[in-house]
Length: 259
Image 1 (cartoon, one colour):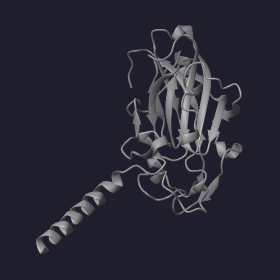
Image 2 (tube, helix red, strand yellow):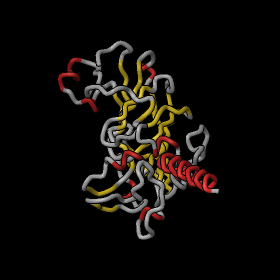
Image 3 (cartoon, rainbow, N blue to C red):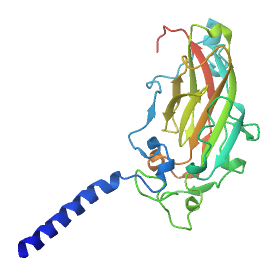
Image 4 (tube, helix red, strand yellow):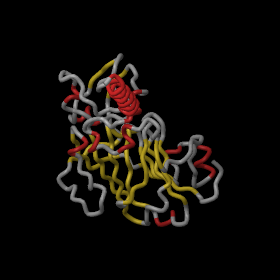
């Protein structure tokens, strides 16, 4: 009797220890609708170019001496009007919007760069101490107190579409796209093909899209999340805003180059 009871106690203790160890690894409630990288603290990006110095090829020596990388003949700014769709919860996002032929004719248009809260989408708020979502590292979808804005705006998602043209004289060259700042994390598709993922919102995300583009008109799709595991580190004394908030640049270089 005593041994049987002791065995049950030990079994319960082992089960409790296992549950305690595994619990932090369990996804947050609501995460079923969330891509896994968003709550993965080790997922800083996929298919991004390695870190490098600030660089831009130039079409002539005169351009290089002038040293305005955004005025390079080998660069095209993608700033301007983009198609935009906003939801307060990832489960409501248009998951197939990146596919060719998806109808975005009724979507809004917003300027890029911008922060969507300043254009009437969601709530801008300032905080200097503490998180604006439930502190449950590395998760960002756990239930916060009901008085939190994040209780209803759990993890807003902005879906962006932009058409752009690749010059015919770029054929045979490497083609890149740079996002200078996107808060907090985003996925990128070109012509319906997934290119990659990036968090680390205050640094440039450089993607080699040579194999995804064609001469003429192409379509870019970006899916931006307000919160990611990176939001725990980017918890600065500042206004908490989201979106593609810095320049987006298409650029071309010879296949052989110094970097």
